[in-house]
Length: 403
Image (tube, rainbow, N blue to C red):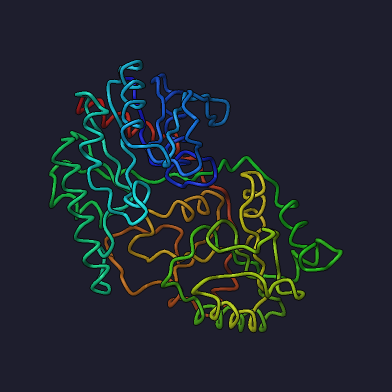
């Protein structure tokens, strides 16, 4: 089966959905299914970038066309149709997130454009996000935007008529089934190979930032929690951090909170920073700044920012556990949490205002249910088997049944 994947962006390490698409496409190619990728609204591609390039997943090369967000839609459609015409895919797989295709999350007209690009090809749609306010409620402005985004989703389904529809999270499956009967749940895989990296590299970097000369000091004297990926606006871990700090005091350890990834706004120099010196005052956390300043009075804080895949893997291997900023009810759709689980890390969920007892949260811990002793018992365990090939197999099987 020949598959043409379409996402908004495909800049490696800069676009979570793009990274997901690349890994899934690479797995499909290794299973014998020719694939190519197309980014339709790529913020990192140049308007002059119109030639096929080859992106790599492991050792697998995937033909890729990246179309700049700064290019007119007319020209993007023309280039995309030419790609479809030359490849003649059996199926087009849209990897959809509303904000990827429009800065305000309102990509009106996208369904018609995709229909023209597809040229009567069968469609598959993976909904990585639905509409804001789909789970819970919010301010009236967000509810209005959410209602408009829901219209975009409905129009996509009615125009493309995909026989296969996927999403990651159980609540999203329920919502989509109100719009279309054939909705399946495809589990999320992590975006990092667990064979990459080395814990000693992670500890070594933390050692430098802590101003100590002994790696054993980092390993033995600190209990290390990571925050990996996006920091959601409503995240507030202060109650949990207070209990964690108390637990560390009880056993004579120092709590160390490490932010890894693009979830926070780094310093102008983009250098890792800690609260061991004046440089940390330049780190910006946006709306979270006051809260982070308060946390610094309880625990040591280091901001690592973005790193290569190998360095990310090394840091993950040096953590004892991670704190998720995603609501418990949407933990199934968190790629960062899935990656952390791959590395054997316990994931503590601090946003528990919305829960669903029917959702299986293996490896996740609700912060409110942990006392200080249980927090101190959190340690990285064995890495779990990579799920990419298994999930890619499920993906292909569902397409074959419907094709």
